[in-house]
Length: 125
Image (spheres, rainbow, N blue to C red):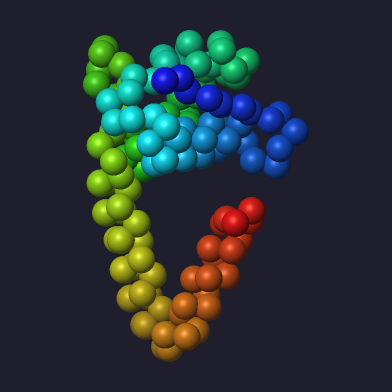
């Protein structure tokens, strides 16, 4: 089992975001199983030809999203399947629904706004 990452310097997305998205997708798809030890920040930066700060930023975002966890000097590992991410997603959806209702939107209008935002966020899907 190996981490497969390709960073395109000419892409519109920043390198840290490409890295974050690819690790998150591989973890969610099971290509990186729970408990898989990720390379060190410096090691992955060297492998990919990126600055260590770029990899560190991606790792911080992944940890915030609950995709990975850092165990001090023991390293960084793929976290248990999405529990924290699922909770955060549900919280975000609740916040959106409450805000849409306060703004006076009906279900159809709120759903359309959410779909527009999702289309914009997931351009290739």
